[in-house]
Image (cartoon, rainbow, N blue to C red; front, side):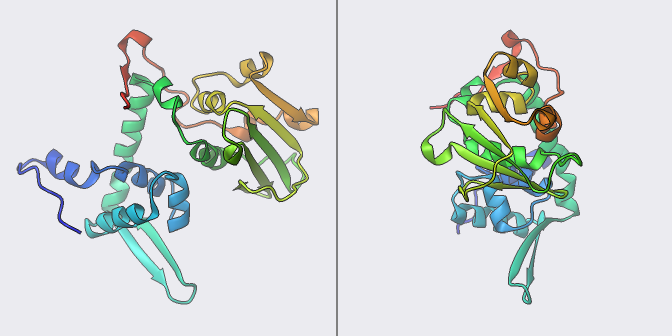
Length: 240
């Protein structure tokens, strides 16, 4: 792989940009900051990124001293973890996300976003509850998606939550029917869950003793509580 061109500036910002501002790199960093260490888990957080490109980006971050690659011969597993320099970048990752939540219009992104990534994030923020039976399964039906991406299952088992996108004839305890765009807005704090349920934008089916726990079970993005600037002040993402 050829070496990326330099900005040719004796400037810490330009040096950081040479490492971090290639396509997908900051999203890979986001997954590492969230604590994902296996190649497959990192890949699930960037589902539209090819696995070969992900491999290249992880190699670049490793060569830069931001990521440490560890291989276990006994278990045939490879782990990617942040070095001290990489951990120090967590505040950069969070600051960029905070700025975007406050200052960007998200509507253009909702026209072409990956619902698989949304469900992966929801799984990450889901909260087990002691009142749930074990296991407890929530079926999400995203009616505005293609048939391949319409169905997902959150599986609460003990203190763990897993995500499945393959129908294994689950014994479902709760079903949620909603547009992926609506669910994304709720997750990011741009729409209210109770309001969406009241006006029928999100429908919940199941025993009332469990459905009333939904706000606690789903959780929301850490960005959801960030105040949003007035519409006329916000910037836009322009997409071709």
